[in-house]
Image (tube, rainbow, N blue to C red; front, side, top):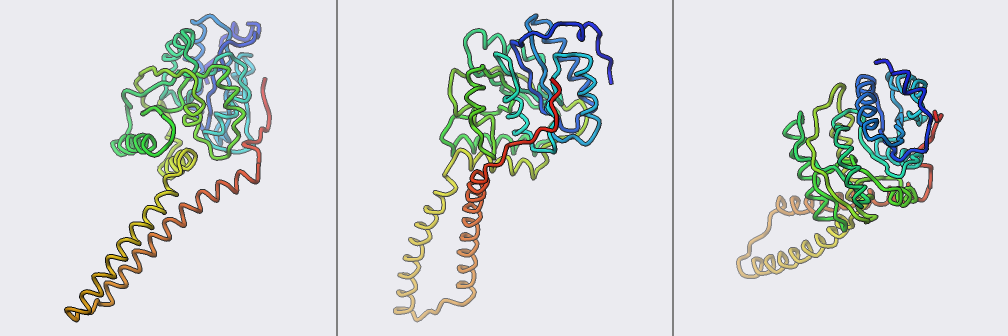
Length: 320
């Protein structure tokens, strides 16, 4: 791990103006570089800040590195989860513990460049209460990832009741008033960029180029992206449930037309519809029913999770 300057440890701890919140999951290779770049940028701003690292159940040396950073620099605070609770929950914990007047959320993998932070702060000082970083380019990602991300944002935009900006992640600055509003929202299946859009306030965009991952592997494989998409859709839209009604009317109408045609053919041509077509129709209707039972199950499962009212996360220890 890269050494930390002694001067940082000797600085008095002041109430932070800015809180940098970064979820961490198996980022031992990137953490020293992330810390160095954050410190370099924030010290140029010359206002008090804190770096809040949330250890989301890392299985490598990430926690040890975070502890070393905390020991050498009191501006580094560490929230250590008892296990992995997920990226969105880790962000929520960061908001719970953040003390700054403005909270900046970004990932520790350095795909979100810290060098964008001064521009976020400038917009905040000009009166914006939510400043989200909007990706103009996504470097180092596969065509499949780019395509699915593009489709996801456009689908969410069409079927949800809120205006979630396209091509934005969790990299953003939140005013203290926005943070205090968000921490009151304790739903289990969280889509933080949707929640930050839902609360309103004055929101502005800053364009940036998302970088390649410095080291390690992505923490969002395909199956996690699917679950993430389901959380976004079910958390902000009833359209999947309404589709069941729409399909029901369409199929009922098609069935009535089919009955009329079958009666006509039987009376005037003597034609008899074969069993193969009947079986195909039954299988089709059965498949549609199972799909919508699955959709109902997704919503019911989320209701069950909310009724149990378990805590969003469990903290093993806090390094203040």
